[in-house]
Structures are given as C-alpha cells and as structure tokens.
Length: 509
Image (tube, rainbow, N blue to C red):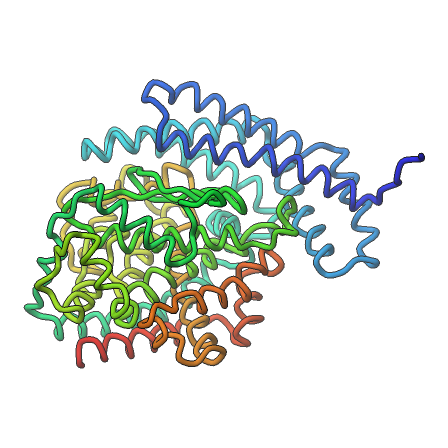
C-alpha cells in the first residue's frame, strides 16, 4: 500500500513532537539535580544538561524544520485558528532559536547548573561573595542572549526582551503602570491592616509539628484540591528541596516543598501554591501534548493559578470552617486550644517581612515590585552585580521598613537569578492581578462558590479554572486570555477590591 502523503504542517507536528519529548528530559534531570543527586554529581550533570540543550537546540534550528514552517505558513489559509496559532508559535520559537548561537545555549545551560549549586552553598553560608562571580557570569550570558534576540522579538530594551520570555507581548512600561496601581492601593491597605492587628497573638503558628506529620498533611491537601500523588493513576509526587518549585506537564508533574518543624503553616500554604501550578500543567488540553500550543499562556497566568488556590481558597475563612478540624486531627491536636477564627486571622496576618515566599497576601506584591525595579536597573546598566546586596537592603527598608541582617534573608533568598530567570519576578505580582480578574468573573459564573468551601465543596472553582484557563493552553497571549475570559483590560482594581473586602471583614476596619 502506498504511504500517506503528509502536508507540510503534519510533518512539522512530527518534528515538534520529537523536540518536545527530548526536551522534557531536561526537566527531569533538573528535578533530580535539586532532589536526589549526590553532591559530586554536579559537574557531570552540568555537562549532561549542556549537551542535551545543544541537541534540542540543533533540532529546533534545523534548516529543514525552517523550510517546513515556511511551507506550513502557505497552508495557513486552509487551517483552523488552533493550527494557525501552532504555526505562529513554532515560527516564533524557530526564529528565536536560530538567532541564539549553539555555544551560547550550551554555556547558559552549563552556567545555570553551576550557579544553582553555588547559590545553595552561598545561601547556607550567608555569603554573598561566594555567589557574586557566578551571578556575574549568568548576567553577562543573559544580556548576550537578549542582545541577540531583541530584533526578532521586536523589543526595544534588554529587559523587555527577557520579560517576553515569560509574559509574551508585555513590556516593562506596561508592568510599571499596573504595579503603580498596585502599590498605590497596597501601601494604605497595609497600614490599615497593621493598625487593626496590633497585638494579635500568632505564636501558635510556630508550634512544632514533626516533619513526618507535615508530609501527611501535604499529601491530604493535594488530594483535596485534586492533585493525585497516591493512587495507581497518580501523575504527581511531592519531594523536598531548598526552594519549592513545580516541574513537568500532563502525565508527570512533580512538586517540591521545604518543611520547617516550627512553621507548619508554611507547609500548608506552600503545598497549596505548588499544587495550583501542578493542576494547571496537568489540565492543559491533552490534544496539544506534543505541540507548541501545549503549554501555559504565561508565567503570570501560571502564578494566578497557584496563588488562587493558596490564597483565595486556602486562606479563606470558609475553607478553614471545613478543614480546621482535619488539621487538628492530623497534627495530634496541636491547635486544640485555638479557635478557627483565631487561626485564620493568624494565617492572614499582614505584617512587613523579609522573605517573599512567606509574605502575606497584601504585602507580597511589594516584594515583587522591589525585584522588578532592581532587575530593570541592573539590566539597564544602572547598577552593578556587586551592588545588589546594598540596593536590595535599601529598597526593603524604603518599601517595607525592614532591616536585612544577612544576605541569606536578603539578596540570596530566591533561586531565580541563579537560573538566569531575569524578567520572571514580575509574573508573581501579575498573577495577583489576574486573580482579581478571575475572582470577579467566577463570582458571576458560580455565585456562592466561596460559601460552598465550608462544606468541603472545593472542586467547582478549580474546575472553572480548568475549563476557562488550563484547557486554553497557549492559544492566547496573557493579556488576550484575560480579556477573553473576563471581557476586561488588564487592571489591578479587582484584586485591590478583593483585598479590601476580605481584610476589612476579617479584621473589622
């Protein structure tokens, strides 16, 4: 029987599947690096990641693939929107990949592995100088890559080029506009909350809970929100690392956590946050598994999913009306003398703090704005890598009134710069902004969904997210997706209104 003659688009899809399948191994190798790899393995692992990135880069930039893309573009008029979007994203991917020299791709991958390992040691030793030279190399390589990509991305600055990696189509100026709106609303609200909670005792949150019990609690919370790590059909798992993260898509999505024996509430909020990321990755449209469109819309949209489950569900009084008895029974009644309302107030205490990942829902975005402003100045050449600790500490004192005592709780607290993820931090606060918009729409589509949390009916809002956002995969750029779902332009107003209502009701101001 004669073979079937494929169109250029169909041939392109086959090549894309090969690239995506091979590239996914890099995620597993990175996960292993941060979880179970022995210390001596870092040298070999950095070489492995470097070679793998080179192979994927060669496949992505193969001239035959370029010809297929051009041929597929000629067929676009006969294709549906989904396939037209696939061709658009593949063209963008190809053009950007072909612009970056293979040596630079390998150098970045190798440097990332070394910088991450050095960051861990520097943070543990509270020694910025140990990390500084590796970060300097990472910054230089990142700028070199951005310089190459400015033209193909159509961006005007180094920072806009890097932001485009995470928030397609957004610029630092647009983000600054939204962040100003956020900052103007958050500063007075922070003061209101601080005034209303003066003297509030939250010491019970520091009661010791054995790590083994926290592991059980984490597994139960994941199951509750629909992230399966226990059955024979599980597509997830939970592991322990220095800095929590989620990795993988579709059938193999892994989350990580750092437990603190004297801070069990951190495990609660962190596991809900990472489960939110995992659910997004698992609920992408399975039809797109091996396609360019088979990913999330942006990092900010991703953050909206993790922070929705962490904050809008996991810090709500309705959720704890249902789950507080379970928390007590799992932890051997560690909070038996504490009322549920008191616990929820403690969990939502608004107070300026040093650590971003442990920041409350109100001040969190200020932590992100600090990083955004530092990155923008660093990549514009206005500050040097060596000045980062000083600039960091000054901004924390200016924005949050916080004095940083050592670099471990300051400039070394986040892993992102060691990865070279410049332009990623804004996504965290953008996630809050998107959440405010989802929250408004969700209240219209499913009235009373919050009240239902008190009865253990947790899944309806998560299913709404899956139907309206997860399954959209990468069919739309982030701002376009937000407008498609909510009918509104990007604005921080709904998020600020949500915070004002929640915290005025909770703390009575």
